[in-house]
Length: 308
Image (cartoon, rainbow, N blue to C red; front, side, top):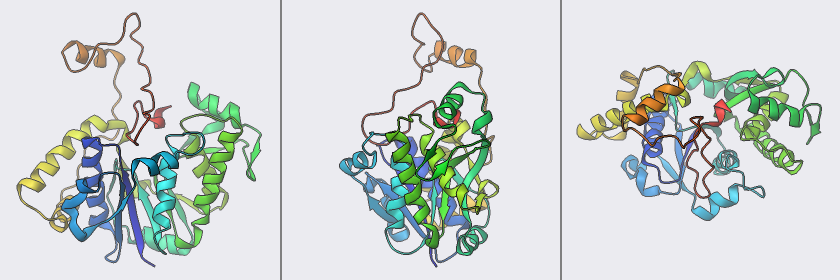
């Protein structure tokens, strides 16, 4: 069975488009020879450099808005992107966020999908024992409940969905996760992690869920560092006039290796703003505020949901 790698790039942000390019190249670098590479995007022209090397699945503004569902939930779009890719013909589906870089031979992953395993990025923590306020609030909304046939009891692992991989025979899990997500929100559960909760819960129930973390780097916690590294890499690729095959070989031969996690003190951001590298925080408080979810497109909000 062919394996279909897919990522989502929408919203018009050049940095996210650049990350998607390098993420796709990392998949090309390590995937089995018969793999297919897809990007779901509202800007097909931004991926013309790949030529016939990738399959573009256009998603216009109306489609992206519809994918947000009846509760207009920003993160539902990611799960719908995976379902849309699975509908393009029989294949194992490996979805990767644009801030994911593969590091290892992916043939064993594809073989494991054929054997019935499913994958998410990694198990991050037990939601029932979470200490952060947002995570505790989410658990308080679902604790002890049964929704769409799934019961939320302790312990209840929370999985990161930067990678979502299912074999062709298990793609019904995607629809189960979507149904669970919609029913949770119908029942009043509202949190920016609820999509990841629904996917992890549906996948975990089958007993074949495994972490993809050993195969990949997910740089959501050092986006600034990787943004600069990605820009330098793409500048090198285009300056040398490499095609996508030579670029994938370069990514495999010389991977980006910088810290995945960078913890910053509040005062480091404040001093950076004083130095002219960003707006000063609003007076009278210096406490950071969440950026509102954008009304259009799919550009990622900050701070990221993984830290909620």
